[in-house]
Length: 340
Image (cartoon, rainbow, N blue to C red; front, side):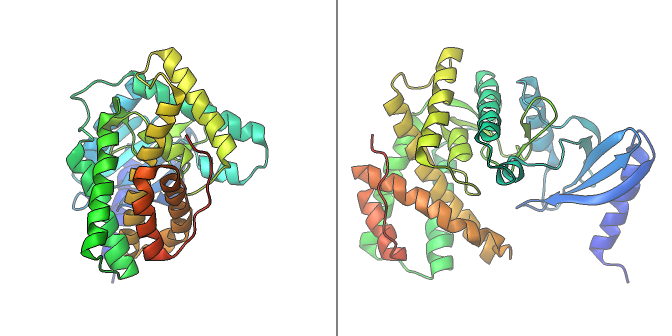
């Protein structure tokens, strides 16, 4: 007896055959992500296409389509849409290739290649930010930022570690979250992808990078996507290299007229504090993906995220109590780095 998954696979393949501009030659899974979306690659004599399967019971394709148009209008290389079936959750789009930044970076030791890819990502991000205006994307407001922070006590601390915080520890966490939010909310606001990192940036033949997974984009802090890129959960660089790329972004953004801080030290502090918010959130998300969704593959990426979080907390006196809380939770020492 056919399973529901087999039936859905048959429907999406049949729909694809109907809407393709040329006969289907090859059909194969392309990828899946942390949501319920799946992707297939459909090859024809006229080239390759990607088909997204986003079950309407779990995913709403509307925001993905609308935000993709916003990004493309800004000059960002997002997939071109050729056909859609929102009732079923099927979308036929252009193929940005199968090579993520992560795969390309892991496959080379050539510093020139890494430099070219990251500077292209900087340039594309600046294009997106220059197109920013309020009222187009949902606000990355205090309520949303706070919900993300709360994933940490709910999923990482309580569920993953199995720890019940003391009243004193809860007070430290609340005070820290308040300080983080005050910084985040004071930053200039722009369009924010929210996951501008090596798994969502594609190496393309022209106009690097190809950009995917943008459906959760918002209007929020200017350093957020830069944090996603350079405090990436999936790949790390030494701090001197990160500083070089961040400084080059800051200089280019300033010359382009974006509202970055006039002093780089102030900008880098914002970058670090935004990173603390994201790292706290990501630890909670990875724990939730494991314990709620059965996706334990993300657990291997937790140590890198925690190390980045600790490193930032060590640098700023306002975060030292939270660092001691992390020590109490995990018992891990901290290595100092650059201080501003």
